[in-house]
Amino acid sequence: MKINGLTGTIASGKSSVSKILQTHGGFIIDADKINHENMKSGGSAYDEIVDAFGLEVLVDGEIDRKKLGKIVFADKNKLDKLVGLTHKHVISKTNELLGLAEKAGADFSVIDAPLLIEAGIHEICDEVWLVSCSRETAIKRLFDRDGLLPDEALERLGSRKPFEELKRFATHIIENDGTMDDLRAVVEKII
Image (cartoon, rainbow, N blue to C red):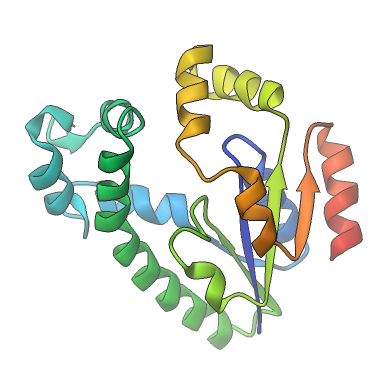
């Protein structure tokens, strides 16, 4: 079974690419979804995160990801700490799901992970697909999607490895500043 790693800059459209690949038979492993499950009360990363960042990240007993995001995206050391706490759990579940995909006879799997390269997950992938968009497009998408103001969006954009560093790991680079139809055409050409 072929394993494609899918990553990209913030708000680049990784999820849209993932949906297109799913319609072509890809078994999708969504690292963000795994991470969100792991952060819920009783999840594998919950206690470690609360121990590290304190009770102020909780609302009604659950980790409030917006509160946690404000803390970690304002301080690179805290972001690195969070990544260190969560990635081992995401990698473990990813490996479990890859086994299920293989047993199910999937032609290919897609590991959709914002920090695919930073976490070292790209090393198990046959190909790495990198999705990118302009800074202006990312800021607009972050406002539309998350309600982030421009300086908050810039803070998030600055928290990730720059595109120039990520692209040296990429098998395919997908520029996504256009429409969904434009994106679909690019992805289908690569498939």
